Amino acid sequence: MYLGLDVGTSGVKAVLMSEAGAIVATAARELALSHPAPLWSEQDPDSWVEAATGAVDDLAHRHPREVARVRGIGLSGQMHGATLLDEDGRPLRPAILWNDGRSQAECVALEQRCPSLHAIAGNLAMPGFTAPKLLWVARHEPAIFARIAKVLLPKAYVRYRLTGEMVEDMSDAAGTLWLDVGQRRWSPPLLQATGLDLHHMPRLVEGSAVSAVLAAEFAQRWGMAKGVMVAGGAGDNAASAIGLGAIAPGDAFLSLGTSGVVFRVTDRFASAPASAVHAFCHALPDLWHQMGVMLSAAASLAWLSDVMETPAAALLAPLGERVDGPSPIKFLPYLDGERTPHNDVAASGALIGLRGATGRGQVVQAVLEGVAFAARDNLAALSTASGPVAEVDLVGGGSRSPLWAQICADVLGIPVHRVEEGEVGAALGAARLGRLAATGEKAADVCTRPRRLATFAPRASVTAAYDEAYRRWRELYPALKESA
Image 1 (tube, one colour):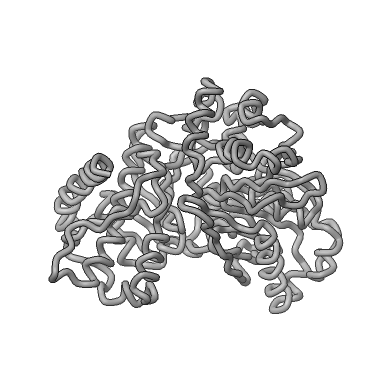
Image 2 (cartoon, rainbow, N blue to C red):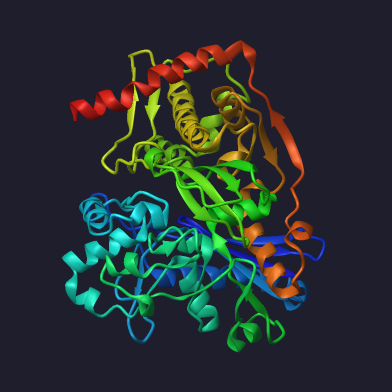
């Protein structure tokens, strides 16, 4: 048996996987976000640990025999979060998260300090990345910065608390702007640009390698044997790729989680910063990947659900499983700014075209379409960087909706596949990495593709209308930016 833990933004998911690769059980715990000031997004690092251990407690209570047979654990997590620890390994302040936008000025300063940033890190400096956050802390909280002994990412902090070891994998480390992504090692020049050095960084391992051993207290707590291996793990999207079996160059998927991602595997470090495409290490040796990133995907639907005080499922139900054409309303899903292709932390969301006769269904449809249009922006950026994407698997919470899947297919103009266990892809990928670390098996034998539940093909009857709607939608961001 193998255990996967996904430390997300809104919650922690735990997946128990059998020797046959099937999901035996799942558990989850919610997490709270804090927004102390405009553009700020923070979490208490210890809440990740409480949620992770609570989820495993739940599995151990419901499935004690299966949990007792766990041989390997893998970790997945939200990327970029700056978790600052003192000499005793305790957090100095709340973690600054991936969707925090306070460090725009520091991004400019970082690129000025290190002109080779793009060549080494393969990415633009964006407020979501970790390094600019440290420059912000140095400038605004110098007393805290002076006490920093280690900087960890969210899942690495959970690993530290579970094992006592400070270790990070290549895929998550690539999102810090401190990694030499092509060489898969920390970059002293990039660290120096933020006032840090190698001593502030955790040890690096590949995602499928052993990173540490589960501490005896947790093994005893959950009834496990001694010596349970903990894998390096992966950032959430690389872990989702492992769960989907996306381990060959060209494999691609679309994630509709809190954020949204168009992800493609590459066999080399292929940076494309000009189009705001991310180039990161994959969770397996000798593989990389490119990503286009939207900051508010399923988060946009969650926002609408909160505003209308109606569960998301109840908002979607009246629309059925397909619509006959675009909504007359247009929605920009930039509720937390945007990365690809705009790299604009100040971008804001908008509903355009409201009339007195506008109904709730038209607004709901517009939100789904706005996210799909943003995904098309990301797909176009990846296609410009390294060629077209022919099809995508769909994962994340948004994958539950056949309606959204069909809208994505119609907007993107390529087949979209709903897959088995698409909602727990990252946790499943983490469990697979835990297995690889424990057994040493070949990745191709473990990271198989899940069963496709349904394929949504673009419909000729609506694609032309969506092409025109997308063209008009593309005009909104520059027009609103100019008038802001």
